[in-house]
Every structure is written in C-alpha cells, then in structure tokens.
Image (cartoon, rainbow, N blue to C red; front, side, top):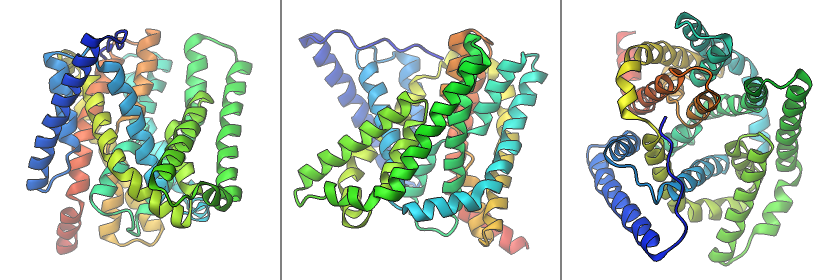
Length: 395
C-alpha cells in the first residue's frame, strides 16, 4: 500500500499545482467515461485503472489530500442517494428478513479469507484481517453500479441492500474489536468500543424511524441552494459522527437518506446527483492510487485464486438470498453478481494490519485481490442479464 503525501501548506505554487493536477485528471476521466459510454460498459473499472496508472507513473503529491477527502465524500454521497430510494419501514423489514442471508454471507465469505491466511502461514490475527477483506462487499461500487444500470427499483435490490447494510453493521463490531486486538488492549476495552458502536448505530436508525417526517419538514425549502446546503451539511455531519464513533460513515449517510422522505427526498436526489457522480469518480481514482503496482505481481497468484473462490461464494450468497425472497432466476443472477465487488472497506481493513506491522504480505495481497474483484465484479454485474439468459436457455 502506498503512503500518499499530505497536502502542502497553501501557497500560490501549491494551489496552481492542485488545480492543474485535478483539472488534468478530470479531463482524462471525462474522455475515458465517454469511451466507456460509447461501448456501453460501466466506467468504474476505467476509473480504477486510471488511478493505478497515475500512481505508477507519478503520484500527485500536492493534491493527494484533496483527492482523499473527495474520495471519502464520494462514498458518503453514493450511500446517501441509495438510502433515498427506501423508507425506514422498508429498511427495517428488509433487515428482519435478511438476517439469515446475512449469516450465510458471513460464513461463506469470511471463512475463505481466514483459511487462506492460515494456509499462507500467517498468524490468527492476520488471518482474521484477511477474513474481513474477503467478507466485505464494496458498498460504494455496488451503489454506483445499481444507479448506472438503472436497477435501484428492481425486485432483487432490497435483498442486495439488506446484505450490504448487515455487512456494514457487522463492521461496527469487527473494526473496534480488531483495533483493540492490534494494539494489545484488554477485553474490557474491546467490549466498550463495540458497545459504543452498537449504541451509535441503533440510535441513528431510531432517529430515522421516529423523526424522519419531522426532519424532512424542517429541511425542506423552495430554494435549491438552501436545500442543497442543508442536506449536504446534515449528511456530512452524521457521516463524520458515525465514523468518529467507529460506525461506518457510509452507514450514517445511508440512514440519513432513509430518514428523508417525500418531496425533500425527491428534490435532494436531483440536486445531489451531479455531485455524487463527480466525487464517486474521485473515489475510484483514489482507490487505484493507493495500490502499489510494483507489489502486485508477487501477490497475483494467491489473490486471483482467492478472488475466484470468493466471487463464487458471493454469487451463491446473492442467489440464495434472492431465491429466498421469491425472486426469479434473472434477479438471482443480478443479486449474486452485484455482491462480488470488493473495495473501500477491504482496503481499510488491510491498512490496519499493515500499519500495525502484523503481516508484510497482507497489503499487497489485499490490494491485488481488491483490484481483481473491483474490476471483475463490475464487469460481472454488467453481464448479469446475459448470464441469466444463457442459464434460462440451457435450463
């Protein structure tokens, strides 16, 4: 994993460099996004490869911190707009129905990572970190794909959504626990961290359920400018508070989207959409920038093998969950392929281990693994309808 240099103290030279670097990156993305649209493919793999290419040639040192902040905002806005598609009642119903699917997801997708870590000769803690890497689907990539492909209203989407939310809630337990284990703190400290995360997640969900309509009435304003500033302010505040309390910022933003309803939700979605697409592109470029291309070849074989296994287990998870919800074969295929992509959480988890010096090989393996599945998962999701058609013909 590459360490990105912090933004230098503001000065005319640094500001000019930031503007030049960011302008060039955005123009390159614009050209490549046009090409992706012409070939009717998702631009996500293109954005990832741009980040990898830029990082390999010369990382943009001056604008790195700006890009990192923009990437965080991108994930937050992706999950916020996804939350706008659902009501609090739909979310709670989906979660209740999705607990069995969430358990299947945990067992099928964390186990291969843990076993792979042990087979590679790593210690139990490093293997536990690799289990987290293989378990977590990328909420950011999935949200972008579902929006780009027009599948937010599909029958299988609530099933996918419930699995993603359960994964993020599992992270509310996992990240504090792993953090305590990495620093060698005691059991009491670990339980306290997990308890704080649980209370924060539950409290946010209760606010969404009980005060959603009142919040929407307070926020609503006829001025697009006032409404946009109000919505963005609340989303970023809640996301930041959730992150500070060891709950995913993505979960906080998603729940804000759930809480908003009616005219506010419709207007907010329209206003935030261009910003979401801009910052989402920055997120995927930043993800590519974090990967050290020189370390990828040595980890390629193990990463590809693990990617093949866990792509199959994610597809199996989505298929089983969608079938349980009464969704037909095309929807089952779409649900399964939508869950394949790994991304931001996997990198965060691996980064914890790298920073603690637990296992030197963890960073390159996780980076190669995530790159394979971020691109492969995006392409599989795009091809889901074709795969479903072939299965139907063969059946």
